[in-house]
Length: 73
Image (cartoon, rainbow, N blue to C red; front, side, top):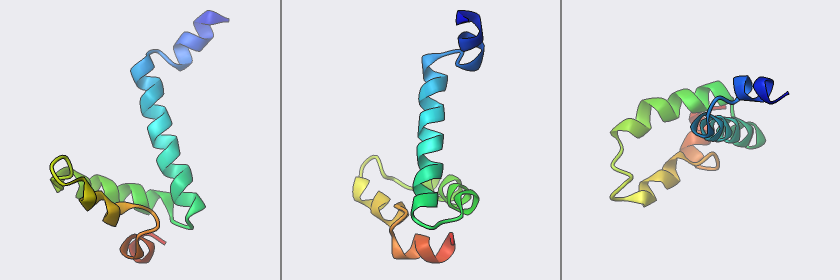
């Protein structure tokens, strides 16, 4: 039984990454967004955003944002 669990979640880091991915997908769906469009938008835009120094920039990328609602329905 333990071996099957280890194959499914080989590491704590992998489990955490899965949690983040599933949370983003379910949050997008809960806000009426197309999850694929939302994730694509995030993956295209966030790498070029200086949100480490200016975390308030992330507000524009939350699922409830008007612009996100327009672009990711």
